[in-house]
Amino acid sequence: MPQLTIQTNCKIDDIDTLCREASSAVANILSKPESYVMVLVQAEQSMYFAGSNDPTAFLQLKSLGLPENKTAEFSQALCTLVESQLGISPARTYIEFSSPERHLWGWDNRTF
Image (cartoon, rainbow, N blue to C red; front, side, top):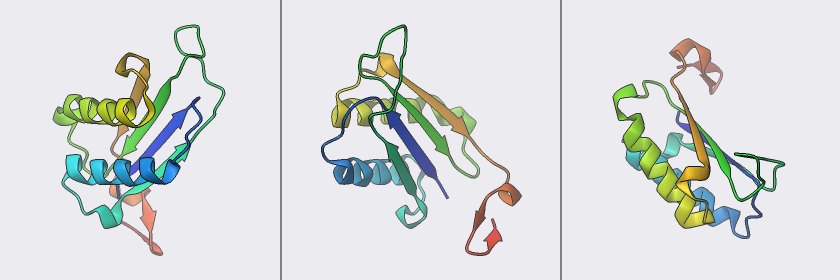
């Protein structure tokens, strides 16, 4: 059930490509089937980081059983994705990782 949210103040010309690349990247870094991955992109948001509205991004990656000892590796992979797809520097990207408890994530009329 990995879910990745990408919020940015940038205009994105090809959101479909970004979503496909992000979905594949999340499945790969978490070693989970892509059939469970959801990607949400919110472009052209009002965002300031370090006192400026230069291109910036905020990502949230949620996944059941997210291994905390691999968040640095995940951060590098996601920053690389954002930089290659959107041209946003890793220094202007924040990422929040979370691992909800199974009973707090619903899908298909039940919880995990």
